[in-house]
Each structure stands twice: as C-alpha cells, then as structure tokens.
Image (cartoon, rainbow, N blue to C red; front, side, top):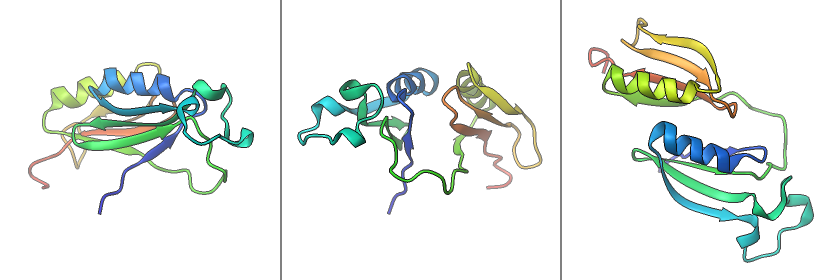
Amino acid sequence: MKIEPYLFFNGNAEEALAFYERALGAKVEAKMRYADCPDPVPPEHMPPGGPQKLLHASLLIGDARIMMSDGVPLESGGFRGFSLSLQYSTEAEARRTFDALAHGGRILMPIGKTFFSPCYGMLLDRFGVQWMVMVCDPQSA
C-alpha cells in the first residue's frame, strides 16, 4: 500500500507544478486540463479560470509522487494541518532545497541544527504548502 498526497490549489496549480520542477528537480508525469476531460464537466465543478485550469497533474520528487489539481474539494473545513517532509543525506542538498522552496514563501523555522537532525527547517512555500526539510541523522536511524 502507498499513501500519496493530493494537493488542491486555488487556480494556480500549473504555476506550482513549474515551481516544484525548478525548486525540487521534480519530473512531471502527467498533466490534464479540464478542457481535455472526456466527460463534460458540470459548471459547478469548473474552477475559476475555466477549462484551461488543471484537472489533474502528477509529479515525481525522487521516487515520491505528489498529485495536484485546480479543482476545489466539495467539502471545505475539517482537517487542514499537514506538512510535506523532504529528507536528504547531505546538508548541502537540504539547504539548497530549503532556499529554493522558501523563495517567495515564509520561513517558519530557519534551517539549522536541532536535537534530532544536524540540519532541519520548516517553511510555507509561495502557494501555502508547508514543508519540513531535513538531513536524517545517521545516529538516530
């Protein structure tokens, strides 16, 4: 069994997809617009911006998959707390990724040494997605 995050953006999923390609070296696996949907999309399910918005996209970060859409989940409210965690073997990789994701975003915890990692930081990227970037301490593995 696998669990893969599915992120919903408010009309800027394509911009997020391009940002993650650059910042994380992610590889886009799939990209489908509402206009490409084989079944008619009911007007109430069409996101702001219309048929050119992304119905579904998938990207790989290393061997991990993240999916996304401009669609809006039918239910709002409820659980909202989550963070995507990126784990690296070197401090240089972690710092490069942290800096790339932080561009245009907000640093919640500057990257640095903690009791559980030699290099750890938290941020919200420019799209409001929370990330934890860290080096796995071989002593704690």
